[in-house]
Length: 244
Image (cartoon, rainbow, N blue to C red; front, side, top):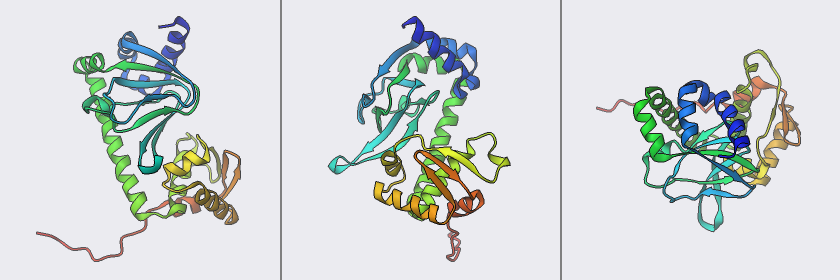
């Protein structure tokens, strides 16, 4: 591995949430098996159906994980940003369920599959991390089903904006905040299962209601409580039945 890339990526790995979780010993072992990848914007790392090669760590840049449909339609499943890890689920699958494409010029580390699995077998902390990630993905998929079946477009956008804000360490202490959209509005629309004109219309609607103010990619959340209220899932009003 190039020494400059090695030093920079080693620092990012140690500083990341993943690195702090697994500790310096495991980080050092992973760096021994790591292969650097330098990608231009638009480069494909792997395609849906490819045999998994390993787990990926984003040193710099941004990668979108997408599912493709008829007519070249795509849905963004996840955005992997700086210091993010992705591909853990594919360790246990015969093929990738998604395609990974760099949205920006990106530098990544790929931890080869077999050595990573061998490291897991020796390191309970790494096993625990992967299980935690799998549980988190399950929760996200359940929430995604709820959003697609129970929420309209405005609710989905409100949930996304509130979730962006709540990543901030100051989220519990402010009544207004500013967030930055991590990607283009076109890509954000696909993540929220709508088209770009619908997203633009909903942004204008929330601005007209003085809930937000849009400044390019920056969005001021002017009324967090109202947005949180809009983001809540609708209550089930049917009759509860018991089944034997």
